[in-house]
Amino acid sequence: MRWTWCIVLVLLLFGAVGGWAAPDYGSYQGVTIKVALLAGDHPVAWESQIPSFEALTGAKVEIIDLTWDDLYSKEFLELISHTGIYDIIELAGFWIPDFVLNGLLAPLDEYYAAWDWALSDIMPAYQKIGVYGGSRYSVIADGDVLALYYRKDLFEEPAYQTEFKATYGYDLRVPATWDDYFDVAEFFNKRDTNGDGKIDLYGNEAMLSRAHGPITFMQLLRSFGGQFFDPYTMEPGITSTAGRKAVQTMVKMSEYMSPGGASHDFTVTRDNFTNGNAAMLLQWADVGAWSGTAPGSAVRGNVGTGLVPAGVIDGVTYQCSELAWNWQWAINNDSGNKEAAAQLLRYMTSPDVSLEVISLARGYDPYRISHYENTAWASDWFPGSVEFIEGLANNMQYGAYDLYIPGTQQYLDVVGKHVGDIITGTVSLDMGLQRIANEWDQITDRWGRDSQKAFYQDYLRTYWGWKG
Image (cartoon, rainbow, N blue to C red; front, side, top):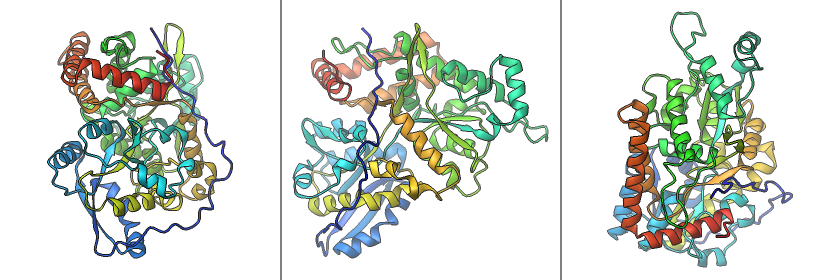
């Protein structure tokens, strides 16, 4: 059985959004709200807004930095230990089922009923994320969608255009399919662009590391029409034709990357691209902004934002862009400051404040209709910024949702572990895929096959309109 796993999201059809009255965020003198965030860029964005919130409410906000590798485990451990050390936690959308099933997150329904959160201004694609079992447990903080970034200066160079056409028999263009993509990657790979005798340009960059490779895998599985599981049996879809094509594509990506591609994570791929060392990059939205705003960016003003290439299986084309990760903010169920924490989340995600946050290019991307609808705010952001925003909107038209069932983090970690071995040739494709399938079955059985099947079917109905 096959479904088309890409949905068309209706964008920007709501007319002008804005004009909300300045809200009252309450008075919380003597209250300290502790917030667990991913270390690095995210605290920078928060720290730009915290003084205003503290002045408005009298509350104090304390940031606790957690590394990428520790974020899930430390948050889960602290919450399940009921230490109450965090009031607010930052988490990926697909972690929410794990936390909710263990009673770790506070429902936000009463706060949404009591206050205006400008929910109608949230992009339709993101309104469902954070709702689980009929209750809302988190607020969207980040409009993640994967996109293809490419060096416009390379694609528009007449000498390259002539050489490419002579080599491949068609015009050099932004790749529409993965087959086109690898023609372009091969063409630009291992070039010396400045004549110093050293390679300074590779064909592409992509996240293939254990931590971030699963995001690339999810994108590619959808690019070839794949599904995670059979909804009637929970048989893993990793060994399907689509699963094989997804992993084969990751292996081929590594062949046109700088050395050590199997370990390249978000930061390495971002920096290699912004340093001018890759012709193309499959990446999250914030990299597009970073390429234009980062100090010393070698590609400022020369980056195009295209659709993620489509996959073709048996003559069927799948155009998909993964709505990957989507940072959420949630409240610890053991917090003694739930109301103040909820007000802080309402403040940070309000239309005006959220616009300031995303404009900092610190890892949070547009997620409100008003962020996209009137691009005047972005006109002087960086060269090509309006084109970048429009490119994100184009990808959202083909948005594909992450997996939202209990244990998603565990399923994906298995992918990261074994795909790396396939890329490096430590194990064969068939053996690696079978190991993933076997471990997925073990995870499903630990959570309970029947309950996982029910969760997966609910996910399909909620996010994909499945009628089974």
